[in-house]
Length: 286
Image (cartoon, rainbow, N blue to C red):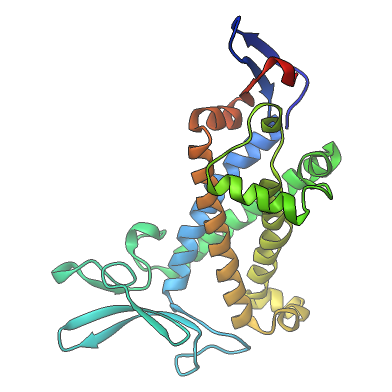
């Protein structure tokens, strides 16, 4: 994160403006490769999901087996209705999920064409896109992890202190973020505890689960490493976990982007492109 190559300017009466080096070159490069990979993995993954838009728990998953989630088109007297079902809850999603478009342009498909790669239904091509960017993502993540451990980035910048994870401090951070009160001055040099916890959960829980469940869905990998099926309770359970983790990461990205915008879009974007981040400190803060 921040280094000592700071450059400061100040007006006679105003706050001091300090430019810090917030992100290393390796962090910036791997970040943007991750953006590309995650975007295309999501779009190709939805293409794969559309081939059978239902999720199950256990070893099997066929049309007659009970699913815990499904996206379908239901024929009714008034036409075809798109339905998202989660357990016993059914939500009409005509025009978006189950049935894309309206009127003569309505098409029966799980997720709409504008969010899948390719846009037309093609399971084989979707799998090729997904596997290519999955392995690029794994290689990029491995490089990031190695650099993070060797440079001390994880220990120095992401490991929360005991005081930070105390209930009082966590509650205060949540309240401040809910009020859109973001760290200022010297506190802006470091990740806050909510950022640290979110990054650690994504890096060390969600992404490893995504990788392991992705391997479990491969018949070839199951033949060589059958313990994967036992570990995740079957291929269909692995598919469900993979789906849940994917959308958890999507939720993380949406919150992350919202925080980037609300806390200063240009300053945050510049720091992830050039590494330079501007903070304002009062004279007695330094």
